[in-house]
Structure formats: C-alpha cells, structure tokens
Image 1 (cartoon, rainbow over the protein chains, first blue to last red):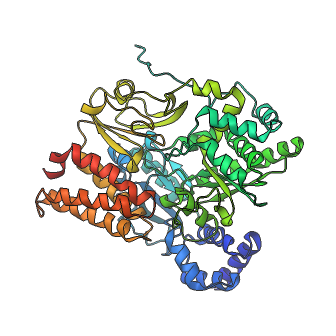
Image 2 (image 1 turned 30 degrees about the vertical axis):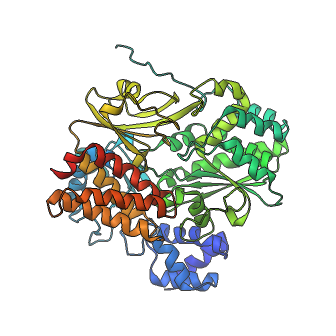
Image 3 (image 1 turned 90 degrees about the vertical axis):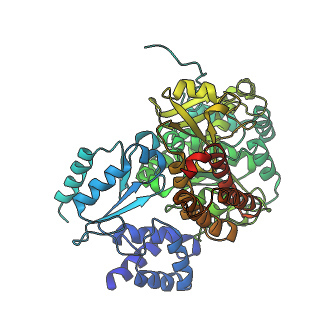
Length: 156
Length: 388
C-alpha cells in the first residue's frame, strides 16, 4: 500500500504530527479514500508515533469517518422527523430503486454508497441529503433521479 | 394577502445598517471592563440553548491569570430542527469573526477557533477565504488575533462544549466532568470562552447599539431577540429573528397551518408542548427555552413516530461514555416499541419515565440529562398515541 503511506505522510506534513492533527489527517484520508482502512489507521499511528488503538478509537467515534469501504459518492439522507414528514421515505425508496442497493450498501461498481444521517440542518427545505460534501434540498423523486443521473454520467 | 405578522421582527443579526469594521474599530478602543459591563447590562444569555449569561463567561475568563487563553466559536449546530447558525455564517460571517475578536480583546486571547460541523463542510472554503480577508482587516487595525477553522465529522455530542474541546484536541468527542468549567479549564486545559455563533454576533451588535436597546426587548428573564429556525407543518418555514417573550399561542397563530397539534421547542433535547398549553407557555428562559429549533406538528402527525425518531437519534448520538445515557437510550427505544406492540403493559410507560428521571440526575452531560425533556413531555401529553 505505497499510496496510503504517501497520502498519510503528505497529510502529516500538512497538518502536523501531534494529537491535534489526528482528526484533520483522518478527515483527509476519508476525502481521498472515502474510508479509513485498518492499514491506513496503522500507517497514521506509525507516522504520528501513537498507538493504533488511539487512532482506531478516535476514527470509530465519528460517523463521517467511515471505517468500512464506501463508494466514490457517499449519499447521506437526513432521517430527522421534519425531513421524514416531507417525504424522506419516498426519496429513500427512489434512491434504492435507482441504485439497486439497500441503505447501508454500496453499488457493485463501488460508485455509490447509500446511508441515512442524523439532522443535516435543512429542516425548512426537507427532504435533504448530502452527496459527499454537497447538500441537496427540497428533494422530489424527479429531482433525485436527475441528480443521480448526473453522477452516473460522470467519468472516473 | 392578510397581514398576520403580529410578532415583532427584530433586525440586529442580519442588518446591513452598520459596517462591521467600524463597529469592531470603535469597540476595540473601549476599555475591557466597559465592554464586559455592556454585555452584562444587556442581559444577553447564550443562544446555543443552555443560556448562560455571556457577560459572566467573558468576565470569569478575563479574570484568569493565564497567558494563554482561547476564544472558541461553537458552529457545531446539530440539534434537530436547527439551521440558523449556518444562515448566520453565510450571510454575516464577518460579524461572527468580529464578535470573536472583541471577546479575544476583552479576555486577553490571541487565538480563536471556529469548530464547524462536518455536515457544513461545503461552507469551509468560503469561510476560510473570508477569514483571510478578516485577518487583513485585523492587521490594518493593529490587532493581534487569529482565527483557525476546524471541521467536525458528524457527531452531535461535539456541540457540548467540553466534548468539542476534546474533539479539537484530536480525541473522541466525549464530554468532560464539570467543574472545572471552560472559563478556567477549556481548550488545551486553558481558560476558554466558548460561545455559539449567534451569541457572538449579538455581543458585537450590543457593543454597537448599546445594552439599553437590547434590554428594551424581551422580558426580564429573556432579554433581547433570538433567531428561530421554524420547520415542520408550517406554510412559512425558515429563519426568523423575533423578540423574546412571546407565548406559544402567538407563535403558532403566526407560523402554524391552522391545525397545529403540538410544537417541539428546542429540538430533540427540548420540550413538546401540546395545543392546550400553548396559551400558558412562554418561549424563553422563564418558560420553555430553545436554541432556536421550533418544529411544528399538525393533527395528521403521530406523536409516537416523533418520539421514536428522537429516541433513535439519542441512542445513536450518545457517546457511550456513561451507562445511564448509553443503556438508558437503548432501553427507552425498546420500551416504547414494546408498549406499542402490546408486548408490555401500558403501565410500563411509567417505568420508562422513571428511567428518564434517573438519566436526568445521573447522566454525565446535557445529552443524557435532556432525553427526559422530550420523552416525558411527549409521553405525558400524548399517552394514547404511545399505546394505540
């Protein structure tokens, strides 16, 4: 895994090698790799000279620091009651049908992961979802289809 | 269109009447004690939800002898139903930075940090760019103060101040024991003022308009105005800056859809108020306080679903550090599901209420302690809906 090694080193050069650098480094790994693998965690521990258990404990605490492999595009649908009232369940059904996966799963081509998330802060414009960092609000079935279509068209 | 806008709109947060640079320049020339007195006189209390007097926080931290102190802006807005801090950060970011710089001046801190929730990462580059601009302004004014932007990673508990410090220090966001309080022992163990985004803007604006103008608004317990995040069954969801002290009846008249059954004031950690109590309920520290979240439910909504949604939220967001909260949240969820399915008698709800009482007095932080608020108020007022 020379790429991971390189990535961790670059991130440590950028953010530093003390405990306070840990979260920005883990966030940087997720941004590139979409998850923090055990190999990556061990590499971080080595680079920052701390125990792997500390890195693991920190990484697994935060819901956005995924420790399982994720697709290139991580979709997080807001599950808070206000989004639910505005039709979140239909949106979730539409996404499941379009991507042919259930919540918590990743498409076979490793492009999309579908998750639910706690309040995303768009209660006045629900239903809402994030695709990686980008927020999409006031979703309808048609809107979701269009959005996913756009992502499907993009070439890796 | 009939004008049903009876509640008094206030325009202190978003107003473009004043240049933040002028306000900052004028304020930084004033003696520190005078600024603290101004904030104290205004009666401003924290706008994140807990409502601690802002002036006292600044005063206590200012009194600490440490060379190293910090100002932290809590932009980890995670309470379900709240979205006002994002709006403030997008529309008037310089006022937030200005409030931080004034606080730094008052308490003797040279470094500020803004902790932005991971869900708002899309704002990061824009905020950073504005921070760079702001730092140039500080240089022009000859002010030695810098703000660093940090990002969260999706953990509600990190909005709790001591958990936020832990997270800033690169650790799991687990709340600390209190005391010591942040004013003595905060970020990196140093005296720290941690304020909500909205509070910092109010502090700056109070320095601009004077404490009297703020004090003239609201009630004796809840001075001034507040930004509300209105959502749910309302024809006009959104952000509103309103004078404090209104009754829920007045609020619902203006924002409800004519069929309002209940309002959840203060998010999942807040209280559910049923229609029959709208008239007697004041929105504010003397009644039901809120960090801004106002979720409106009409008669088509099942309050069981509402409660279940909140309990699921707490079960997932509990940091797991203390047993009452970790196990309590799991058992509450199992419990209401069992009663609904008829697997437990209806009297079991009473046992669950007792459990929330225990959590209230034994949980380590505000998260576990506040589960009782929504749980008891929903179960008490909508018991039939929990059973049938």
